[in-house]
Length: 281
Image 1: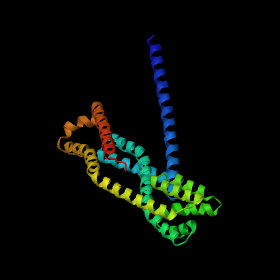
Image 2: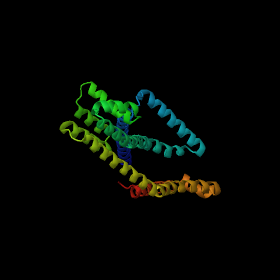
Image 3: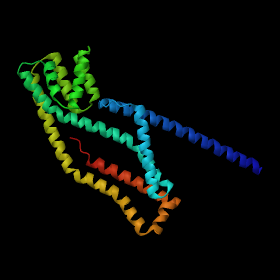
Image 4: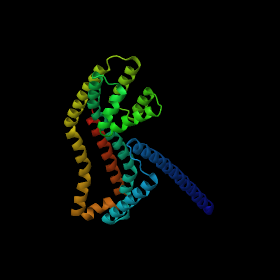
């Protein structure tokens, strides 16, 4: 009877372990596919045509070197676990930061383009010839996005469809205003120059208030960074001053539970501060 119970428990544990491994493998495959697609989409949208087959080994090698370095500095194998968690969570954040930074640069270039386009229209030029001339003199990412729109038109795509593709590539409010104004003007005509000047003034005012909001909330964002780094710095100092007392935190299972609780509360606090400091204009 005892042997039967032991065999049953062993079989149940084996099945649970096998199921967990299958679920982990499925989750990793989904994460890898999503990260690959998101990376390719972000790089293509940024006009960075890199070979994913060559980029993946480089990223894996850098991550392995970083984990080995941290494990060597910590002197324990579990030192790689926080680094591994960071390497898993960091790529989506980096890609999102790249998209957000590119969109902000695009929005910052729009008012000057609209003002120059309005002047060209008042001088008697057409919309598309004026755009070609102004895009050639602009910098990226505006020159890349509008240049792609003009190339799509030369390949036979309609003006409205090209504007729609531009709106899909740059889903910002500023781009939506410009696309709507150009689309309505191409269908109905009217005083497009006055409309573009009005939109340019609106975008400049919006960027001005965004800058003021960022300046006023800079202290809150800096406090979130300091509060996030203070526990780690304090733990390193205490580990240097009282290594025997801090060893309970690093080498015991209940110490690991405390570390996980601290990390969870840190993440919740950072997200809460960033949400409070994020003011929409």
